Length: 329
Ligand SMILES: [Zn+2]
Image (cartoon, rainbow, N blue to C red):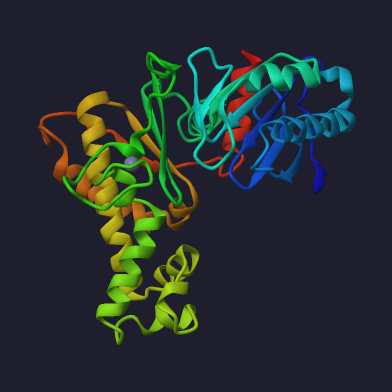
């Protein structure tokens, strides 16, 4: 566990809120001030088997942060969790990588900390963070896309986070793009995240290296000669050095990403797409092909204003910052 206190010049005594990002492997928490700055942070491994242990871990992280900034100055806790959250923002209905099944997380954490608690889906929290303090500032109609192993999404419409009737809207990674396509972890086939994500990047690279070993030599070397050990960061590094096969992999998943965003534009007509997550660190290697295919696939192209597609600004802390801001309001 680490604790880091950073600059707190802008904070006001009454304006501090703790944001917590609960993922499948780690619980990351930070004290966030009114400007969206993280003034202290902590992280712990996620206990994945017992729901009560997750609440205990969140409570311990909050207690440590309160000790660091002054117990009386923290007003609320916002939690971004990797799961489906109900409309009341109190229960985690389902979390594929955690033990939560209809878990009353809000009340569990509120009882432990004695603070008001808001629970939100992690991708929604990231979208809200980017909208308030990052690349989405000033765009009241915004879609935030997180391209990691899978694809997450958060939608802001008219300056409000769109949750849907049951609280579980915005799962854009599971819109079906390819009839009878690759099997997805959700049980369906052909989902967006099977084509435009980090998982798809690695799958594409493995296929191309296996079919053209000469062209794939650089990538194969990065995996010690074993194609099954090829990783996303290694493919990104090779592409950034100009390796043609690695660049081709990004063109492939980037164009799928652009196609998916064009479908979303047809439905939602946002002014901006913000693309974050680990794979987006490749920046224009991913977004260049995505923008090109977006323009190609957009319905009524050339007769309508086009949304722009930009890379996220806040990085991994977006979820902490967004969850805290949602709890503040
Ligand atoms: Zn799916």
